[in-house]
Length: 368
Image (cartoon, rainbow, N blue to C red; front, side, top):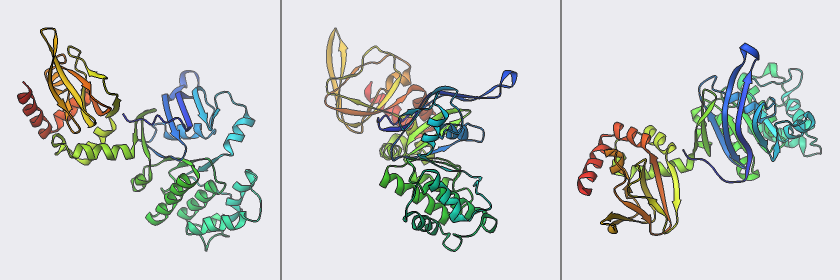
């Protein structure tokens, strides 16, 4: 699984659990979740209804109390934080909810202006900024209309403007484009992208809208209260492109390739590092994306050279196919990067790909 390990994270979740109810009615909604999201990233969170997406989102937004585990937002630990501290953190977050939550007695402009007042934004630039944002979201003729005179999609656009107007450090959005047509939805996520790129705003979106997946830097999938996959989109694209050029994977569908890429681990080795040791249990399959390795075999207590492999080559399949110990040593000659599949994922690919199995059989014949 590809995970972002950079240290400029503004959202840090570690060992986070959450429960609803008490006594015999107590149920667990989140299970030991760990997550880091960097400054300026757009992260989309998907998963079936009831999987815990909104619960996690509202915990990050300080709208629920952290019960168990660590949740650090913008350098502040929320577990045990006072109500005053939570309020101060909340002012740095922009919220966009599917339910709109607009005040019916206020116009679109006034609903958005409330967000600026809550964080202390003042000055002559506030009014034109609100008007400019509402106009960009297609509401130029409805700026001074009340919610009862707006369609569902127009109310949602007011809610988006309200969530973004105060230049938050973090934006949390729950199905922000569900009520929008394609053009309006695209304009909204373009705003997200601009804020992320220009201002370093971090955006976490819960959505089932596959029209906006292309805006994401990472896609997180939640199942039954657990983060199942956390995929870096650009790395996934790079891995898929590498796999497409490898004849083993020629008959895999794009979806299968993406799923495979999500389960590949990227490892880096320095020159001289031992990657595989003869006699060890075969647990992984390696593909070299950059660098070179030296393959040797211990015979009569002497290490004998076998071959060298470079970018695009692979190794480790013999032990996996035959369920035997490693039959050779593999050592990095220079700085080398490998894509690594564990045994279970490797066998899943073998079972689903005729070309992969055929090519591996040829390789086994040639290497023995």
